[in-house]
Length: 168
Image (cartoon, rainbow, N blue to C red; front, side):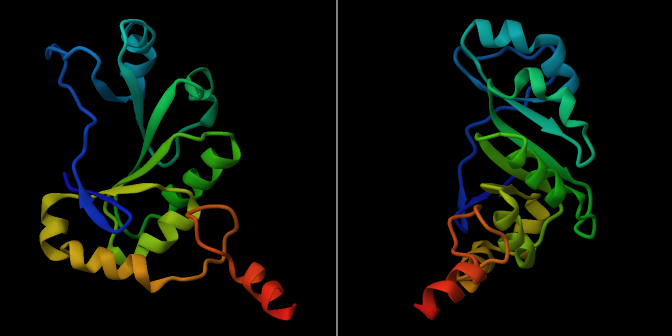
């Protein structure tokens, strides 16, 4: 699945493994939450980096034991009209998660600025979505927003700070 960071399509070095599949040494593993709970401690102990795939309504208490060990959290977007993933991103950041945060699923380029503003670092879309909205659409979406409403995420100045700065 194509991965978008800073408006560009990039290689994804995280692995999603089928049950029973051989795990390469030192792999970055993106695991469903139930598999993380069952196998995560043992996988981390032998040197694997851990990531978790969560739904957009996951109880954050389930991630508490892993919060300091997770390097990636991928939040599912089952459809582009379901905005609960944006709320989940903001909640994860407020909860103290500092690793990579990925929106995964049905997002469109028009939602990219909002995703970054809510705390997402990357967006993962399907091959079909990438065919409909190639890299040029995401580059334009990245450039289209010079200010954000939210404060503190995405590296973009927020509108209120810009207004205060212009008053000086």
